[in-house]
Image 1 (cartoon, rainbow, N blue to C red):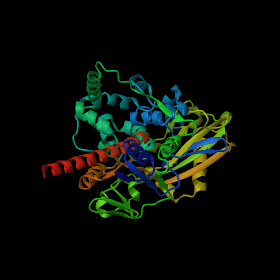
Image 2: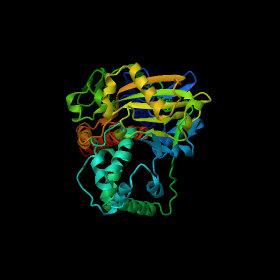
Image 3: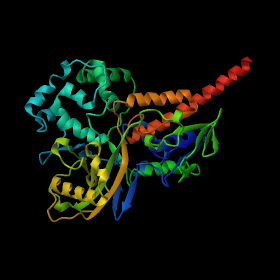
Image 4: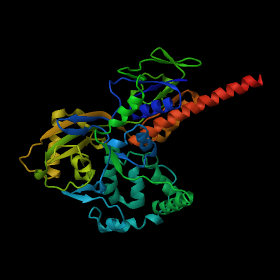
Length: 457
């Protein structure tokens, strides 16, 4: 079987690599001259800059195992325990995000009334219908939790607005816990008991923690590209997709099947019957890198970074403490910060010049991180993603069902990407792997069916 993969981001590379390992012929097309999509790592003047994702979660098993298969374990970097320290900016202070009941009781992020309100959660009835992330948490935990904890979390993960995202699509695990136990707390207890029963007599190691690579996350797509050497067509936009009765023609070349992994906003070349209705909206994000002398930074930096609630009315979404997380990020004696601007709450960044965005980032970091007044950054860099992250809104469930309908109508066509199974790198990788296996399984079933029909005749 000869398969065309449209897109050389992490989902497309995962799909191509999986097809190759399953013994299928594959060609990967991408309009860019590089692989990795939004995974981009740059070495500039002694600094390592991540323009997209910064780290990975070890809990994403398929990707973690692939890293071993690709020979990347030798350059793997595990974040230290300080990476668990994550902060929310509140009225000029960096307050630790509470990670347990005791911390939740002590945290200044919530008032006493809000903390008492949390005790009602197990007794609040579940709701079957979908609702926004903000409405779900307001109903279950109270409005202050949404303002001070949920809002910055959603800004950090989706660069989104909790009032516009679907709880069933964006945070399905929490909705499932409510369905399972009638509340988040009871659902979590039931889920834990079930997991223990399933693991009885089994040794199933649970990987935890966060990791990256000495030369950045770009090592993963580069390794996948190396495994697919000779099968990549970079600088090759797909302008023509035609289906015949038993094959597909991509830019005039015949293929038995296709996996589309390009972002949903880039499907203009697909015929109308292959374009699922209601694709997600993508939000803009600007990524600024700023480095300062450690002696000039007055705020604490012993953690992953900080998130900023909308109620604080700052012009940025958050800051990552790069040089505190992993080595080799900046020269000795410096703090390298990554600053995120934009998202759903600040779409105005698309109208600003790069110089103005960098100025805003410097002003915000200078104030929030208590940089000495006269200190200018030793290094600065800015990258703008006009369409960074798909928003899992109320139409997202219907959109995914539309993807499934297209695949049922065209069994030799499959979709994969961060718009399908989750927006993280690990979920996107799994989406590509699953699409490849799904396609091969369908084709084997089709061949078997034809053989049975022929034998019967």
